[in-house]
Image (cartoon, rainbow, N blue to C red):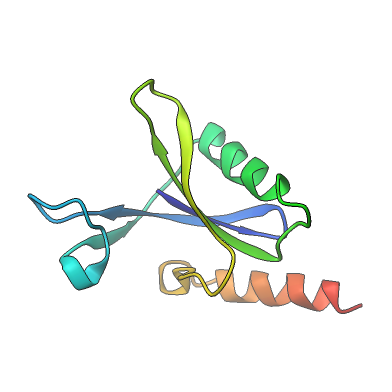
Amino acid sequence: MSLIVFNGEYSHAVLKQAKAGDFRVQDDFGGSVIPYAPTETEIAFAINATKACPELPIYARVDIFTDNTNQLAVSELELIEPELWFRNDSKAAKILAKHISLCLK
């Protein structure tokens, strides 16, 4: 699951899936991406992951999974040029632009 968080606020999410027989989710390796509706727990977990940073990132992609003990875990916290899946949420780019403009004031 990849949850997109702008300035500490959840925006949207996608589910990345590997092709059958593979573990890689990237489309270069046959993986696919579909829109995802995360639970409130998953959203809170992703937001808290960004808030754990020394400075709140203006944007982040929080990749999470359920581990072998059925607990949420971060697999990747993308803060430098992540794929933010704007094509999966038509409002996301405008939300990010709003947060950037607020930081500039």
